[in-house]
Amino acid sequence: MRAIGICRFSYPALGGFKRMHDTIEEREAYLYDDARMALRFRHFEALTLPSIAAQSDGDFTFLIITGESLPPPWRDRLHDITADVPQVRIIPCPPMRHRIAMQTAIKEELGEDTTESLQFRLDDDDAVGLGFVQGLRWFARVTAKMRRKWRHVAFEYNRGYSVRLSAQGIEAEEVTTHFWACGLAVLFRPGDPRTVMNFGHHKLHHEMPTLINPAPPMYLRAHHGDNDTGETQAPTGLAPLDAATRARFLRDFNVDEDRVKALFAAPCARAG
Image (cartoon, rainbow, N blue to C red; front, side, top):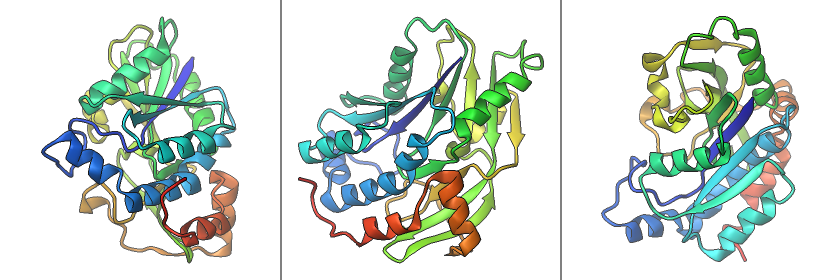
């Protein structure tokens, strides 16, 4: 069984953002603004990459989709910080429809596609628990008989934390949510023409059977000034980490508050 995750990293897609632009050039100017890129890298290096690099089950691929036009300093930095994570594959892609670009990358990674695949998506400013991939395989294994007549099935961990990062550290709020992208995956049969990117994550339960596990907390969802999400996901009860939660973040997500402080205290300057 294959396990494949996909992450859009400042990819100038045609569509796929709530913030609209009239031309690709305007979208690239917005995406590649130095201050914005610095913010994205801070979150990626503090949350996403540590949680992917330390998965308890390392048998998966993590596709990072970037634009072919990503400025060389940022492109080089992305390659440098992911060089020691064998699961990562960086894929430069020309502008096209968001879902088509993501679907194409997954299908190319699947190749001949002769086995079941667990597919998940993760934003470049979120984290998953270190047992996420292992937990998805557990879901698949224990439900084998139940799902044998289902074309697709979604697996969701619906508990995690909303977080806000800064030079002062991490503020967090434990949450229970419904079909956020950062806590779920879809299992596909071999040869299925569709991928996880062919479904809106908020409506997966309209399209297929869904199995939900409320424990353990399995994601960190970041909130900041560059979020491309609606106000319905905005946290209302963020508070500084206590000692127990700080230890949990390090143990269960490989997210180190001291590392966060250092990254966010560093000058906001163009890479290179």
